[in-house]
Length: 375
Ligand SMILES: Nc1ncnc2c1ncn2[C@@H]1O[C@H](COP(=O)(O)OP(=O)(O)OP(=O)(O)O)[C@@H](O)[C@H]1O
Ligand SMILES: [Mg+2]
Image (cartoon, rainbow, N blue to C red; front, side, top):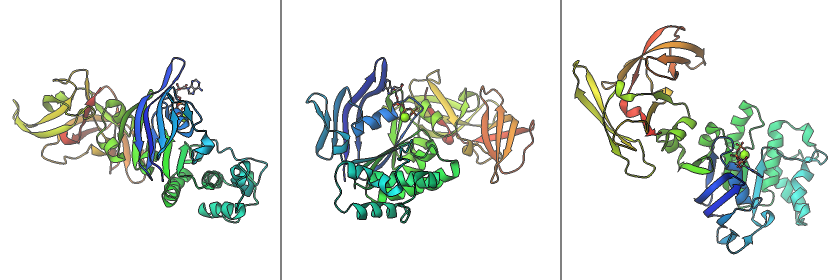
């Protein structure tokens, strides 16, 4: 069991700040997902943790062992950190059979006590007992992935680092293996850091998620919080789909924006209610936390597709007119791409009934479902 702690850990490559000074604690036994677009620093963070990269500054400790301290010149090598690693490129040795692939690191360290039993136990763990004398090319992609996992845990590490381990596999297999990998890490009591740019993968596997952008952690929280209460427009747009309301005040009577109470608590819709308008229709007041006092360039509002209704959902719902541009049947629903009058970007909404291309539809949104964030 190991709690990982980073304090002020930063890494720069020439002009690129791959990792801005970062403070982070990863709980013992926690499964942390690290999510973000290409080049945001995910692999750099993982490599600093693993000891494959030397940070420019800061300290890293695993439990009560300091594994990196820039000022004291401490840099514990990867093989002494008690870690296992699985990468996108599984790097199985093609000329070695499965048994020897799993045994490789143990032999390299001359740690051969009970070797056969330990390798077999690891193979059993990934449900590949009896596959020891096959070669990697005689295994499916999913089996190869499980061998890479067995190899990473044969040494009984307390910590497991995974960098896009599923991205080379096809979609259906990836979904199966997600559950399998999380179950295995929990079974072994591992503290896990899992890097991916697949938001669904991160949300379904992680206890907690870091969303990164350009070397910075933009949000750190439960998957539900990241999805439902993104702290910035970047996070809202990156995680899941977000339909943009260019000027929410055209549809909703957004009367007041109050400064956010917390640094990252921007844009929460804190209350809504009815107010009379000139045309007598019930309209809604949204009070949202935002960067400024009005809905200027600094604030964006959007709504998730599943929160847009094709028929009125409640007394407070606001109606928007739209024209359907594309309709795809997904089995359990239709996914529509439509052009909302006045909106600059197309929206994605879901429908239970078939809707034709070019058809005019009325969409309803509940103001409390709006995600209002700093731009
Ligand atoms: N060894 C290196 N030398 C120079 N620049 C590097 C090096 N490693 C990473 N970088 C740069 O640091 C930034 C972060 O890279 P990193 O590999 O951490 O991104 P990532 O989030 O893992 O991206 P991806 O999803 O594409 O794997 C990028 O701009 C990258 O080009
Ligand atoms: Mg990477």
